[in-house]
Image (cartoon, rainbow, N blue to C red):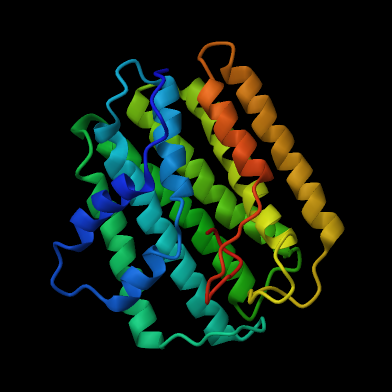
Length: 276
């Protein structure tokens, strides 16, 4: 691993702007959703996994994948908001225009896959499969959560684990695939990504100020949230310990430490229960 500083969020933003600016039918809601995230956490995870595992550390090579996961995160965030609005299962402080939200989310979905085409040819097809797997898991989770036949084993903590966790797992998988490591290493990276993403998202919910708007059930199962947090923190720690036997995990460890302890300070008009 090199001693380079973490990639600045603006570099990831410039990358996905190259994708969305090429379309004449860009929608204002696309920009609104994309710029609710300030730290580009998922894109950062792609880059830092790649940088930790790759022998050549060409960050420009992996930026299209960092942009892709950020675009996909925007799609997930907006689609979740739309489903909440349509189902009214939770109290919320926003109302999305259905047509605009559908068009914008579909646009973000398409842009995410378009960004993959800007990456190295040798890994783009595998990265395409990674995004598909993430989407399948999240779509199934939305179906269980928002349909009339809502799953009886639904919980807010499980929802965050399956949505935020899947995005984190996908981000780590993209970085590992771009680095060209074997499947055994990728498996530990995915476990790390899922663990960190779930923990930082649950911390966001648990530490939010009561006056902040958020789309969640009026009563949170604090004990279950903390149980999931501990489980996923343990998963991330074990994954790091395993990876440390073959690679330098110094920067991964630093990223993990910040991710599991940070308290989100953002105040957004839509602090919903999907990844920030």
